[in-house]
Length: 136
Image 1 (cartoon, one colour):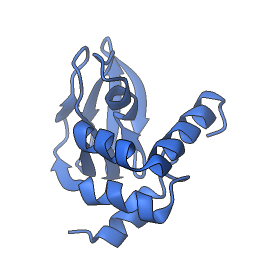
Image 2 (cartoon, helix red, strand yellow):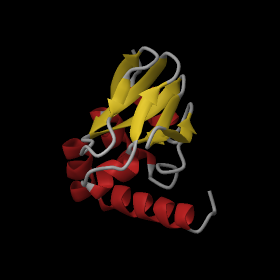
Image 3 (cartoon, one colour):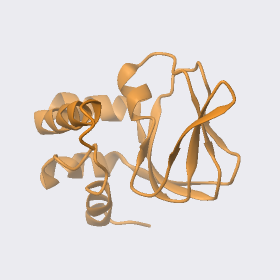
Image 4 (spheres, one colour):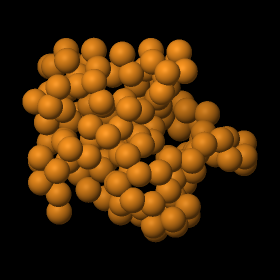
């Protein structure tokens, strides 16, 4: 089981969390729970409202849309961030393609952290802008 400091160190490797101060990222780490999945486990289904995001520690998750592979997520990547932030039905499914170990963060916990700590909100927004601009 990972300590809080280990979780913070790992989360800092994800582009979406990289610009967040360590102290603020500690709040995210405190809300993150370790979880494991076997291959073919569905993390969330197409056209549903995902209420959880996953930070992949080990393994691989594939995002599928209309039966087609859309994107693969590996270690230090976050699955479901856009779905959780949008809060609407998401047009893709996420399925483990290998045994996966991940940190799970529930949507409401994530929203609460963003509401309480503007550094988290600012870091996420900056990362999303950079992603949209093709910088990451």
